[in-house]
Amino acid sequence: MIIAIIDGYTDEPAGLGVPPYLGIYPRYAYGAIKKARHDARVFYLTIDDLRATFEGDRGIATKNKTPNFPETKRILEKADVLVYIGGLHTPGKYLSAVPSQVEEVARFLRPFGGIKVLGGPAFMGSAHGGGTKVSSRELMLASAVFDHIVYGDLEAFLHDFIKNPGEADPFRFRTYCELRDYALLGAEVVRQFPDYPDFVIVEIETQRGCPKAMGIGGCSFCTEPVRYSSIEDRPIEDIVDEVKTLYRLGVRHFRVGRQSCIFSYMAKPNGRVPVPNPDAIERLFRGIRSAAPDVKTLHVDNANPAVIANYPEEAVRIAKALIKYGTPGNVVAFGLESADPRVAKLNNLNATAEETYEAVKVLNEVGGRRGPNGMPWLLPGINILFGLPGETKRSYELTFQFLKRLLDDGLMVRRINIRQVVVFPGTPLWHLKGKLKTEKHKKLIQHYKYKIRHEIDLPMLKRVVPVGTVLRDVRAEVFDNGLTYGRQIGSYPLIVGIPKRVGLNRFYDVLIVDHGFRSITGIPVPVNVNTESSKVLQYLPGIGKRNVVEILSKRPFRDKDEFFEVVGEEKRKMLEGIISL
Image (tube, rainbow, N blue to C red):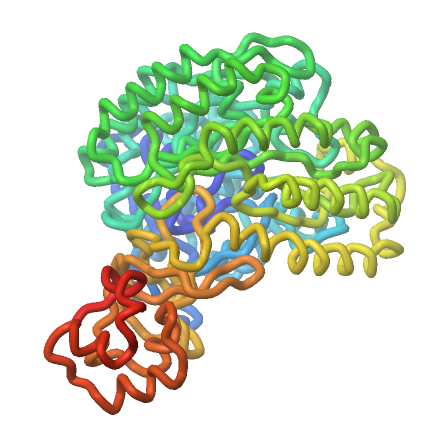
């Protein structure tokens, strides 16, 4: 039996599977198939392989492996089962990969005769644009093209389908006991991932469901409580064993990100705000670090700020464990969404603005110091969602003033993510009569996005990574229009624009020389002052255009003393460690 898994990439509230992230769905699907039939030939393809094969697009410029176009087509022609994994629920800006949607993949797969299965969050549709409901056309198209649409767990369906097609239930969910074997067997699919082995970061699941939703219901827009109606914590030993297996396969970057709140792992239910369990989280991360002693990245993702604010002592213990066993540059995303208390109440949001402020303070106090890779150890991120019911002009101003308070009080936030609400089936917003009235606020939304980017993001970025900071291990991913774009590997890495072409898929140490609104400009160091271009030389600290002209006229320099005779001895202290000959 030949089975093709097509990864269309996924992005949802509690999970990411867009390269360089390898999400949970392809790994679990691969493992479930192997568990059901060990002799099955399972091929992992990405949507970029299909784009390259059928549209002549060479795919991601940063791919580690060159797509084999004839082989991709041959696999699809011979496959008995074609499994498509997709679903874009919390869209962001992606550097070197673009998630697919059902319409695109349907066009590619229609001509092939294998049994077609759709899995992942795609059964609820994808986010085409803010302020809208998911297109019913997309959902109808999925029904027309795919033989099976899986509404439960893809891995449960695939295991049962391979064993006995007639008994497979597309609504069935697996247990963590079942998942153990799927996760371990599925780890080996990482070998087929384009960014393997040096650049892949693997998303690790710890929990499913939303603890807050179990107490008082979920946020009005969120798909997580719709998919999972109860809370289930994955056993520590299962998580550690999966990390150990992936580590043995050569994976060195991990994000313990598949949960709605890492601070609520194995927490005690307590209505709106569960009681954290620092001992369990300490054991988890100690176990992970023991299984992966030379890990290069160990980050997390989401956290409910209300948990941190209401249980500061426990939260500090957890944050210290994340720092002790993790790596710097770590970010926990806080779902504030709106600082307007009326909007928060109407939409049953996670936390109040005051709780979020207190949580930001706690993480700054514990995790604000800078680590060896140039980034602070552990900072919060803030999620803002525009277009929610109940919003007025005052709502946007309250949210802006909340962010300004963080800035004025000297606190650091790694990033502010601004999205516009998308309405998915099953969420409370889906059942509202009529459409969301976001059009009347369209200009206000644009105004406040602009205001936040210019008045908050820019000065905040200068605080998080000041000019002169050296970021270590920045991977160069894309070259476009005279700039090479790169980023560190991690949860929410900063995009660095390098003002020249450098070799892709290599790591560089980069000196930060300028700031944009959401990205930064940096130059690889050390800078060879005998060979570097004038465009890059002018970015060196203390070097102006006049110095650049002198450098170009006097080089090559025999040693650094000659160089400092030209640019001035007073610049030695700031340049000594970042230039070479």
